[in-house]
Length: 112
Image (cartoon, rainbow, N blue to C red; front, side, top):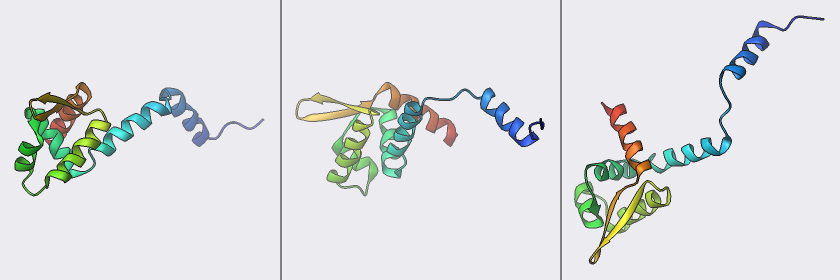
């Protein structure tokens, strides 16, 4: 019987050393990263890491983005469960969820 080649032995060892992650976890993380792959959405996330804001404040802070465009980005971030609205009078104020806060920390550490 022939001995296993060094390449196949290394491959088997690396598979044994790294526990397999459930594909659902990988997909969830990939979806979260897609949410902030757009520079505007990433900027919105980082602005909301500073404090809650409404759409008008975000439009002013972003400068060149229209209200419909900002609202669209907010809807995508809300769908990804990175932000959540809080109603106050006629306005919705947006803040980060726990997942959004964790992602903002990671982004801050990368930018540092």
